[in-house]
Image (cartoon, rainbow over all chains, first blue to last red; front, side, top):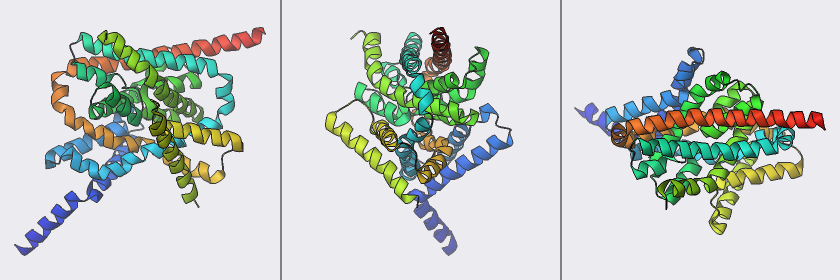
Length: 243
Length: 120
């Protein structure tokens, strides 16, 4: 009896302390990455996707609210900011290449930003999605912290946008390299750019597995995509809603 | 000591965030922070060795940082069940289209630039 109560107390303490969900996030990711490596890096066993599935299952089974989980996981989430700043280093390392290609880079990214938002919103609208879903869907290819900021400004749901952003990231990272090979895009610079424009940081993480050059172009694309989308998105939404 | 370089990343982010608040620019703080650090590296003309090591470690685990936001999908399972077809079709088709269009435009423009430089 006594020891039962003590155990219960420990559980109550742990489940309300940020430490538990912080630790679970890191452990789930490590386990997911181990599975990914063991599988011979099968694209479908993307570590982000696996870790999310494990954690959502665990939280649902234990009846834990997302807010409780996030109180611990926010310490990992917070590192997105410094990591975005850190992308300046791979960019700088490839400065010469980027300087020579500034025009193709600029045109590709503005085209990509327009295609990404317009196609997603039009397809979802055609299939009857609600207005709030459409707005939350528009910045799906933009890196999470930026996409959430944009959504908030144009009247969508930031948490829904975050989920759609991660899904898009994982999807692009999983199918990206194969799709690009299929349409004979073989240049590392073009592959990196396409991965970064489509799948932001998750695509960039995938691009760094291909080569450092692919990763640098993906990081550049992700940064400029965030800039371009801040301007392109409100225009696309105005056009779709005819307002 | 790596702490100096972690501080440098945080200072750049903070400056970016402060600048956005001050000017009301529609750009996120960390992206401006990245531009700031980039400008600093250009002025200095190189990446300090210690900074390179810290950043390589941080970026090696970039995927982990997206997990907490992704778990937020559980808040929207009811909505996704209702609109799953529209959302799935939009995500899959738009992702395919964006990948292909961006990849092809970039490949085409690189070739165009190369042929023009040979022609000059």
